[in-house]
Length: 186
Image 1 (cartoon, one colour):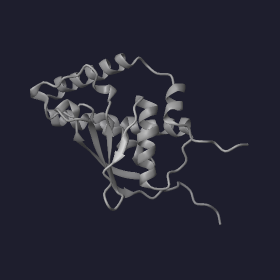
Image 2 (cartoon, helix red, strand yellow):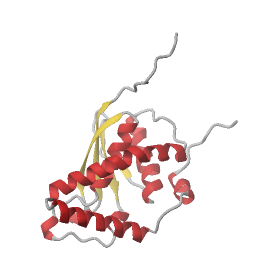
Image 3 (cartoon, helix red, strand yellow):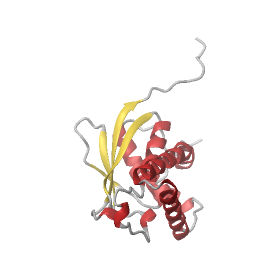
Image 4 (cartoon, helix red, strand yellow):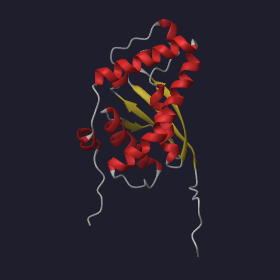
C-alpha cells in the first residue's frame, strides 16, 4: 500500500462540499449583529467570538487531519505553512502568507489579503473596537491546542479598521506534552 501523500489546499477545497459563500457571509454577519445586540459590549462580543471559534477549532482539526493527509509537523514553522496554505484554503478558500518570524521562531504573522467573512461588511464608528473576524483567531487557537500547541493569537491589522490587510499574530506559548490514557506494557 502506497503511503498517503498530503493534499494541497486547492485539491482539498475542490473536493469538499461547500455552502454558498454569500449565505455563509450573511449568516455570520447576522450572528455577530445578534451578539452585539445581546451582549452590548464590544469587548464581551470579541471574547465570545473567540470562544466560539475555539470550540469550532477543537472539532475542526479532526476533519482537517482526516481529509488533508497531513502528518505531524516537525516544527512550528512547518505548522505555520500548513495553516496558511492548506487549512485556510480548505475551509475558507483563501491562502495567507507567513511572515514576521521572531528570532526564537516562536511567533509569526498570518497575513490575509482576502477574507470572505467580511464581504458586505462596514463597521459603524460605534463598533470600531470590534474584531469582527475574531472567530478565526479562536479557530486557529483551538485547532493548535488539539495538536499540543498552546498559543496566543491577536489581531494586528484589520481592513475593516482601515488597514491594508488582515494580519493575525500567532505566538507559541508552550508545547504541551502528549498524554496517553494508558501505559504500554514493558
